[in-house]
Image 1 (tube, rainbow, N blue to C red):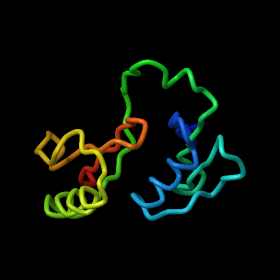
Image 2: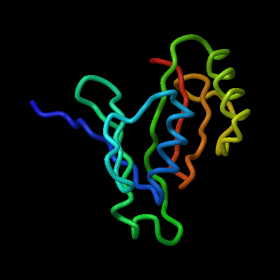
Image 3: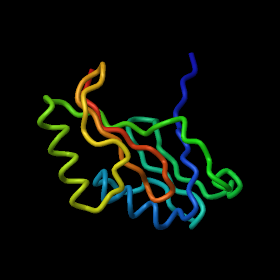
Image 4: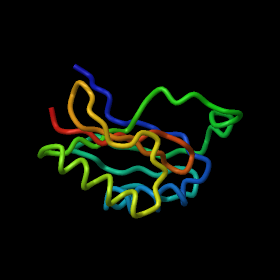
Length: 122
């Protein structure tokens, strides 16, 4: 069986966004040889990539229909603490902490408006 093993997020400035994700997730890119593409290894054989090769993908006012999600172990207080930490970094908060069907959650944006959700581990 084949499974997806790379998730690509379109960005306008890979170098700037690598710095953003480094700070947010406290990880280093596993592949970063050019200013147009970088990847972060998330798990064995699974990567999150940043790509600026499709500049037209960000033209106009693109609709964001997907999210990168960080699922945290622990209760609602862990999600609230992550929100306080990221808000303290000046990250744009799109949805403040609230309860959803899967638990406490919030959503922030990267520099290009890509959505990043924090939620509890199911």
